[in-house]
Image (cartoon, rainbow, N blue to C red; front, side, top):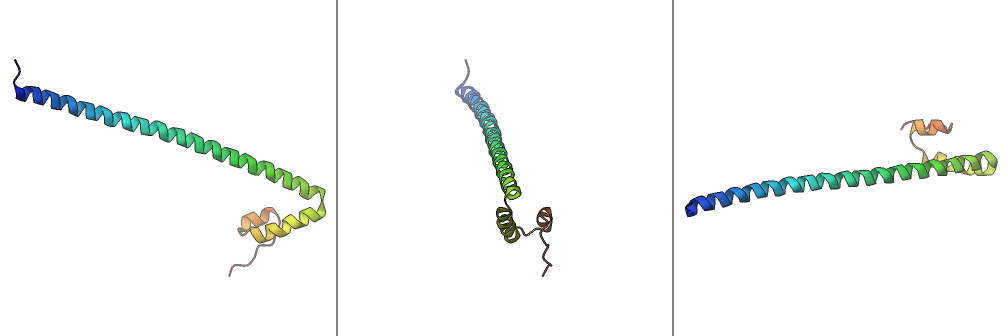
Amino acid sequence: MASFEEKIAAAEKRAQEAAKQVKQLKAKRDMVEARKLQSLLKGQRSDDTRRKILVGALVLDMMERDESTRQRFMDRLDKYLTRADDRALFQLPIPEEK
């Protein structure tokens, strides 16, 4: 028959193993949740990119069809775009650096 100390030691060992298993399961759960969140964010980014492409296509079409619309958008782009490479896409003058 096992002594109380042996029973306590065995119970403590089982408790440590259970705590280790709980820790592993929590880590696995956190990884699964992180993957789900990453997938959701990727989908949101994809949707955002698609919206921008579609709106951009519409705006470009509007600019091609109507000169006054084109000029209004070009005026807005001239004020909005600051990076030289972005401005070059629309053949806008590149301001000199200060």
